[in-house]
Image 1 (cartoon, one colour):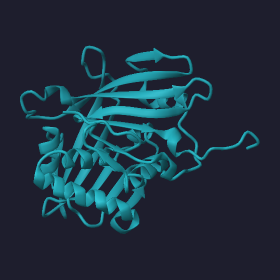
Image 2 (cartoon, helix red, strand yellow; image 1 turned 180 degrees about the vertical axis):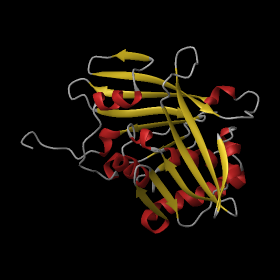
Image 3 (spheres, helix red, strand yellow; image 1 turned 120 degrees about the vertical axis):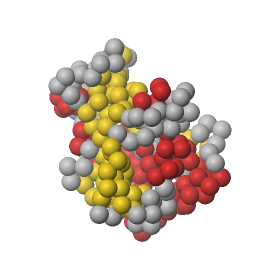
Length: 254
């Protein structure tokens, strides 16, 4: 089952998805959703070459992620404080072959000795399509978002979204990192670049094999060459972030 979330992040999708499944998962996920209302009290963001969201009061368990996605991590390794799960996503061609030289990104989940999620990191390549400032503000916007169970969406009031003044990634810079797309959809005012990434995983539950395929759609404004929207399917979860919703609007004199 896939979920769509507008103006949100991967974290928001997991929270929403868990809230729409079993009762126990719902209670834990709802706790995280409530924590988002006081973001700085419950979370911390660390940006280096990675983007890391730290959970100050861990709630979600590692089994919640497997139960939701039906997928296991690429690597499961011990750490001094618990375990680290890494999910590798590798760019593939139309026939499903891994492209050489490899273009890949990862996301890491860190769990404590109680198997509770303490941190979630995204690699530098992922930040090429989800810039740190925009990723952080999208996380912050989850607090107070309305839950639409029928459409399986978390939807924020755009008038209440935090605005930032920052440059959006340019198409040339993104292509330099991701390479040529599998497909380009030409529209009057924008171009949509489509990429396929394969999740490295084992033991996929029967009937969920398609979740290992991750489709990424990047929308570029023809006039400015800015990346304006990122949409993708990551380990069976769908995300859509419209970066323009978070930008400060400038007057023509600016």
